[in-house]
Image: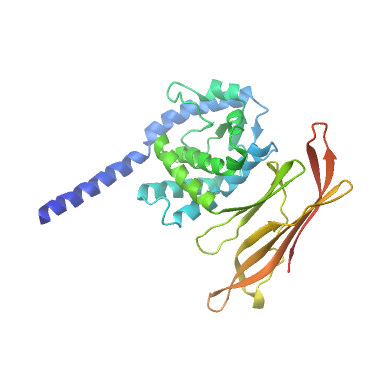
Length: 328
């Protein structure tokens, strides 16, 4: 009986090592595949020298891609800190490598390039991977990620940010040397699920459209939540909340989040629109002496003022005049 248990344990150990070894491509395989992709990449950029590159404006999809790419390390950390996400050692190792790539590349230009459907099909599709994809990259962090802009705009408006989380986990997973689409799809789904579980939204339907305030937080420990505001998918700046906040006795601020997020009724005065969002602010402070964390609860109020321009299509164009955040 003891021998059988020993043999079983040895088999499990050897099998897990084989699986782990098979996760990443060899350096020789990556070199060959990267040489092929580099040629396609250079040809695609040359064919579309005016490529819309993340960080240089663009619409809702481009803005979402820029935001998620720069923040992806945060959502990966949430996953790694959760007992329900990326439980295997292989998955955790991949995510740590993806996080390192994002931290190194997120401030660099031209890491994400949008191509038209025609150019994407012409340069990114081939017989080795004939399946239609939204994005394509190589197997090294310095290579760009190309996104089919028409396919990306087919994402549901309400699912855009979670879809971008999954897309970049998958593509940067290739850049760290993982070839398996199915494995990266599974891993991307897990990070996406953690991302979605930490979303809180407050919506206001007005002017034939939807205003949406979104908070991206974490259920794991103290965290500085991220805030986004949009009108019909177009991002609007959220004023800084905690830059002027000070904990008692000079203690360190270690986390901020909101609860009971809700809108006041919109106010219109002539051609000016005023919006007010209220919430309970949760400010977590750490004592310098013993590292104990305590909570300060204060009322938070955001305000935005817009000029309203009525378009011939009965839609509205809003120009931001002023915004503010108050803590009471």
